[in-house]
Image (cartoon, rainbow over all chains, first blue to last red; front, top):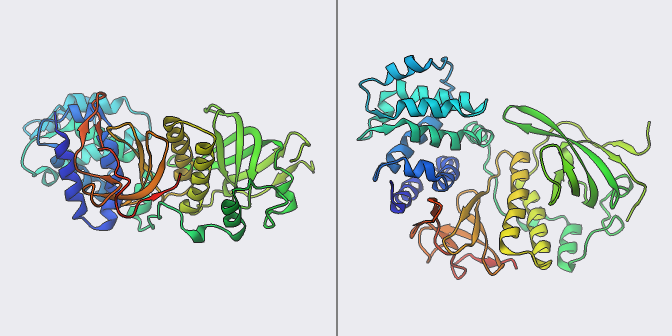
Length: 261
Length: 132
């Protein structure tokens, strides 16, 4: 099993990379730290080597090289014969447990790793099962990877003062909860939803296309950019926590009650 | 047309993640003021940041655990948000050592679950601001 100091070394190596590469791989590194099966599957002093192979596979996504059909189990294992690769059968079985479309993405990158011997010339065997686990972490966030690889801007994490409208800044300074009357930027049409029980129909883009969600609850807050719903629940999620909904993704809001704050 | 049924907009449009994060942090502040504990605050922010990530492809916050039970969220490259076990909330930087970051990448330890945890945050590090 690897030691924590190996991950510290991986952070140090990552700091030497271009900013875009750091932005791409730092989240993967952090999430890998929290994956005990991945960490336990690696022998001591092999973490960084596998991370480098993963990094190259991610950067290769720019060229979209993964068009080949993933072979059947026997053919897959034959490809690994004589190669410096460990646990190919286990890797194959693991990949088959993943849900589509993540499975196809991991399959493609794993197949690419086997074909590109140069990727693996980093001084020792590569454990395919651990590489598959690494790929699952990395490729489950494909929208971010695709965004960065296509030259998209990596947004600042923390808000700045200019992110606050004058009304919102005043509201935060005064610690006053918003109402439709205090926020002059809010149209009367939007203000009428405050405090009302509503159905909210939203479209959320995902890596596999857009999904439509329906949420029902009480509008705790509404602004020209977002609303916060005390949700009674929506498809696939419990309704205990307030739901932050961007109005950019809202298709329609259906008022269920006439109550207004 | 049903007067209670208003078409507001259609189609997904990416919004600046950091502006939405302003609202998420404000909700975190309100939950803090309402007395929520450290774990519940972290779950709330985790839920809100996940929603922001879906709306803004270029905005990311990766959750981490610290060996003292504090929760952290690492943003693009260096900015971080930390919820300490005493419920205090800080923003700061990811550094290499305690001298240069609220969170830092030396002194990792294995947690009982087998995951690797960050060391306890250092709220005295330069660039650190207390939110609550």
